[in-house]
Structures are given as C-alpha cells and as structure tokens.
Amino acid sequence: MKLKGKYVLLMIGLLEFTDVFSQDRSWTEDSLGYYEETFWSQVKSQKSKEAKETVDAIIDKGSAELTPEVVDFFKGSLQRSKEIPYPEVLGNLEIGLGTLEYYRGDITAAKELSREPRLSIQKPKCSIKQQEWQ
Image (cartoon, rainbow, N blue to C red; front, top):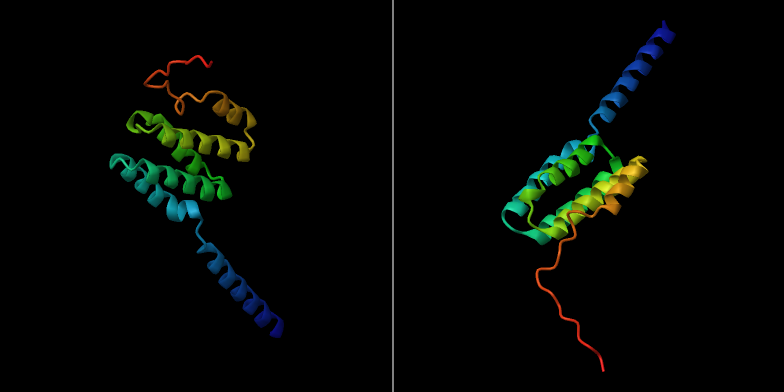
C-alpha cells in the first residue's frame, strides 16, 4: 500500500511539471503576429527606418527558433514586394530570408538569395558624369 501511494504521488508530481512546461510559449507563437502587424503598419505609414528595425528584430528573434512561420513571414512579405516601396526594407527582408535558410541548412537557397539581389539594388535615378583628373 505504501508503494502504491508513493507511485501516485510521483505521477501527480510529474503531471505538475508537464503542466508547467506546456505553458511555455515560443516567441513565434507569442510575438510574431504582433511584429508582423507592426511591420505592415510602419510600411503603410511610410516609416521605412522603423520597418527596417522591425525586420531586424524578426531576424534576430526568429533565427533563434527557425520555425516555418518566421520563414513564411519573409516569403510572404517578399511576395508582396510591390506594397513596399523602400529598397532598404526589401533588402533586409531578403537578407533575413537568406539567413534563415542558411541556419535551416538550405545552403542552396541561401546562395540563390545572395546571388540575385533583385529587389534590394535598383538603378540610380540620376547619372554622374565622370570628370577627368588633371
């Protein structure tokens, strides 16, 4: 009877620890949605510097977890690139996606993103005349 009582107490103790650990939420579940809403709000209100900083924060915190939701944020944002008129923000999105792909072990995808900076580099709007140095 004493052994059975100890076994029951042990099981109750293990269930308590399981309950505590199950309440531990990841950054992706807890904060990614907030950061995503903040990012799109900053883009719409033409705050490119703040939007770039938000992308940097998502890269920093998202690279610690490497969840598919974080990668989906970057891919989805790049698919909506026509809504983002800021080359520096688009460049950060590509850098972020490349970084996450590298960390996830998809070296080929990371290389492709670094070889084709199609969004982050644009042609200059004005031309500079070369001067002859005498």
